[in-house]
Length: 458
Image 1 (tube, rainbow, N blue to C red):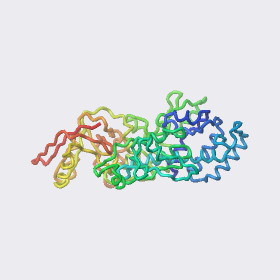
Image 2 (image 1 turned 135 degrees about the horizontal axis):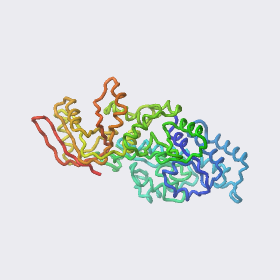
Image 3 (image 1 turned 180 degrees about the horizontal axis):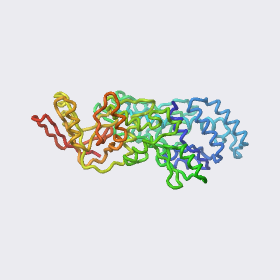
Image 4 (image 1 turned 60 degrees about the vertical axis):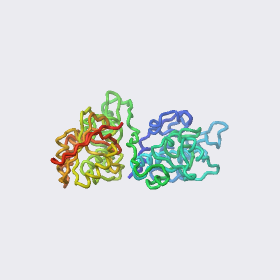
């Protein structure tokens, strides 16, 4: 299975140009993540060679020293000459220092992006990062001073902060050598990286307390969310061949080829997203979960068993679910309900926990199932048979995502499972970390029903 680093690098577009590092730093991070560039490299053939070697290293097919020698040979073949006075310096593409710095930094950036991507989905168990040195330097930069200047706090000399702390963005943007990212290596040739800090360790340091829950996660945006191109296609045959090659990944809008981003973050109405997920992907994707429709596969797995949901198939399925929910442009709805069945002790514990006036979705699950049908919620609450029906309701919800068209599109597949779940076509979801204010609780002992009215906390 290709690594996260290799897959992201494979999606990048080589962008030759004369821009220096400081100028590239002014380009938005999301755009830089979609581009492969090197400061002041305007020859496309040279840039593509560096990109290919970085991809080989990221994919595990080549070592740094072998790639360095291959690039030296390529530069000789291309009759490359550095500018006068730059021979042997970091600005000389053929210098060992420039080649190694370029290869290492590009691979480390991809690995840092993947680490951030995965880490944000696991904040409940591992809520913080520690910045540590992975590679020695003859003259190391003072990263503790940089960390404090960026707004961080040292813990006995350790550079530790929550994963969502703005210190990481400041750290990657505050100096002349900064790369402009909020993940390692932060600066060119830094040698720095992240280690995860567990919940227990974060509590011991005083970063969080026992009651802490992670903020509502914001999935890392897909590099293809806004990607489009005007393709110079002169014949219908070539256009059709390009459409076949990019099936499921792109579609024509006049003369513009729009990348549909099926596994990413491009916003869609739920019925349009269901249609996109029903499209066949290129054959090269078919060894991936869901034959390449990994986001759809994650949603189908979650629909099959909410409680036992886990990361499967080699994908970051939590992130796939959160992206799916976060990209949906849901229609307005006046009210949503959630039905639960509880025994006496569970009910007492539940009511005790919300006595403080707030209700929060459980952090151990990526999504929480709601519905825009009060009858469906009541049916679900009674189906548990544990004695008490608990019905939550929220008026004029804004943060919920409409999964109804997705359920309809894959309902037959879910129903064919050995123990099909009780899933309705009026399915809506809230993501982990969603919070609500408790407005009113009514407990009816005759019907053994508890109704709780909530409002979203934005």
